[in-house]
Length: 69
Image 1 (cartoon, one colour):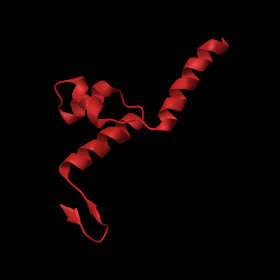
Image 2 (cartoon, rainbow, N blue to C red):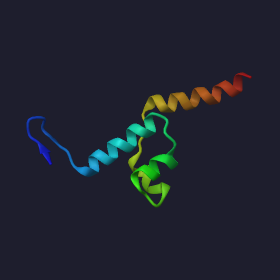
Image 3 (cartoon, helix red, strand yellow):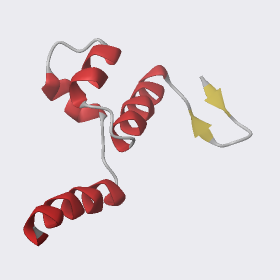
């Protein structure tokens, strides 16, 4: 599927990749994303689901919270 007016190539693979990434970035557990995509292994799900910098900052803040106690 090609969207010539937008100049982008949209395929089922890119849609699955975007879905997994957005779920991961929203905090959905990887086991749920794995089930949603129908993967047999969490390693495959890891290839699809990418976190952004804000997710890494949130993780750092959670750990820092324990250091403050």
